[in-house]
Amino acid sequence: MLALLAGVYLALRRHNGFSSDVIPPVALRRWTAAFLVMAALSHVWWYVLGIYWLTDDRLVRNIVAVTLDHVLLVPLVIALLLRMLQDRRRRLWPWVLTQVPIALSAAVGIIMHDAFYGFDLPTYWQVVVMALFLLYYIRALLQYGRWLHDNYADLEHKEVWQSLLFVIALFVIYETYFTNPGEMAREYLSQFFTIAIVAFLVWRVENLQQLDDSEECADEAPSEDQLVDDQPVSDDDPDATETASKNSFLTFTIPTNIGVLLSKHCEGAKLYLQHDLTLAQLSERIGTNRTYLSSYLAQQGITYNSYINGLRIDHFEHLFLKAVASDHPFTAKQLAYKCGFSSYSTFATAFKLFKGQSVTAWMKENTPPREEA
Image 1 (tube, rainbow, N blue to C red):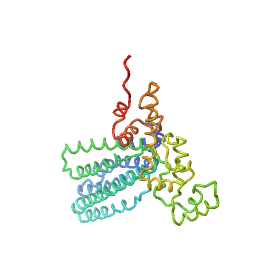
Image 2: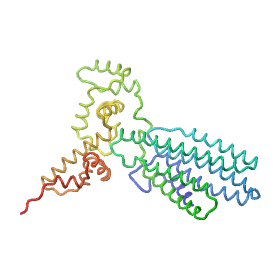
Image 3: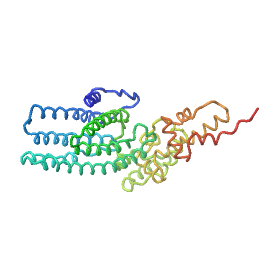
Image 4: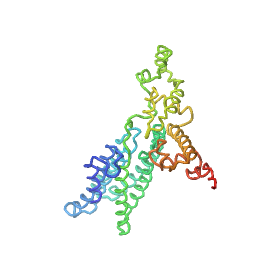
C-alpha cells in the first residue's frame, strides 16, 4: 500500500510537494512511479496465483510469480536509476534483453517441472546481471560527476552519489529475499527494506533538479554551424575572424581570447555572483560556445565548478575583511549567499576544499583581536 500510494503520488502530482524550488525530471518521476506501482502489483499476482490460480501446483505457481518479479521489477529499477543521470541518455534495451534468458529458463522449468531451471538458474543469472549493472553504474556515476563539475557551479540538488548506495543496498536485499527459506526474521527485514526503498525513491525524485541542458554532453564535439556562429568575434578584423572560425572546424583550435573574455565579462563584471550559473550561460555571455570554454578550462587544469567557486571564495574573503574592518554585523551564511552560493553547506564544502580549513577556523584566524577599552 505504501508503494502504491507513493507511485500514484509521483504519477499524478505535477509539482514538488517537498521542495518547492526544485523541479524534478519528468522522465525520472514517471519511471519511479511505474516501478512503485509495479512493486505493489507484484503482491497482487502473488495473491491471485496463490488463491485463485495454480493452487494445486505450488512449484509452477512460484516459478510464474518469481519470473514476473524478475522480468518486470528489475528493468524498472535499472530504468529509474539510469534516469537519475542527466548527462546523456543511456540505453535501457540491453538490460531488458538480459531478462530474456530468465523467461526462457523459467519456461523450461515449467515444462519440465524442474526447480533448477525455474528458480535456481534464473536467480544465478540475475545476480550476474545485477553485478554487471553495479560495475556499469559506478562508471556512469563517475562520468556524471565529472560532467557536473564541468558544467555547473552549484551541485546542490544535482549529485546522485546516494544512488550508488541504493544500488548496493538493492543487491543485498535481492540476495536476502531470494535466499529466504521462509524465516520470519527475513520476512520482517524485507518489509523494513521495502519501506526504506519507497522513502528513498520519493525523496530522491523530489530533490533532484531537472537540468535543462541534460541532453547535451560536455564532451560533445561542436557542429560546423556552432563553430562558425559561436566563435568570439574580434572588432579589429571581422574577416580574419570568420576565416579562422571556418578553419577551426577542421583543427578544433581553442580561441586565444577566451581568457580575456572571462576576465572582462565574468571576473570584472562579477558574473560569478549569479546563483546557479551554468557553463552554457557563461559561454553565451562571453560570446563563445560551451565546448570552447570547457576545453579552455581543461587546458588550465581546472573544472568549471572550481573556476566559479574559486572566484566566489575570493569574493567572500573580500567581503569578510571589509565587514570586519568596518565593524558591520554579518554572518558567514549571509556573505556566502552574496557570493553566489545557493546554500551554506555547499559553500562550506567548497571553502574547505580551497582553503584547506573550515570556514569557522579561517574566520577566527583572520579576525583581528578587539582592542580593550
